[in-house]
Image (cartoon, rainbow, N blue to C red):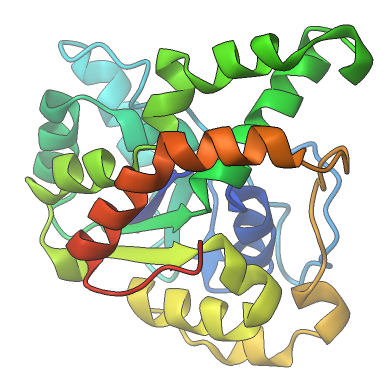
Length: 253
């Protein structure tokens, strides 16, 4: 049954979340088996999970009803909570989100947030790697251009995403979790997600600590220089305060 969508954020622990959820016998990720390194073992009677990211909604043409029917049909197991996690969904246009609500009005949403300063740095390092550039081949101006790019700013504007999704889904259907909780309370985070999507949290309690605390696809390990951190703090300071006001809770950033 189509039960949940993970909508982001990019570089905020969504691969870790996928690996944990995919180990739960009551949670399914339909589609072709995911060909990535997984750190968690499957249950003896559990099939290999489908892909974490399907990128359906951010590529779908609104008049393609056949594609929509095919997409929804894959979530057909009545005994499992099924879904996918595509970080790009955080930035979906309002008309697409409206169609998601129309297709699955009871859908549960999961949004992992990370300190936007650290998220921007991690994303920039990923862009550097994809460009086949070494750290010593670029200067601060290169990083600032990336930090200030429309894509990077949009992915770090969590408040805008929450407000857009909140126009179509009530607060109780959109669970916000923090990347930092993966480090400090991973099992509690998973139990909250289990309750949110309506599955038994017991399998998460049974996971060994080594599995729950595993870092999945860790970054390059290059620390963010203080000079760039200060510039990013200036860039995101007001955004963080506005987000705290919206969520009505302090954030450890």
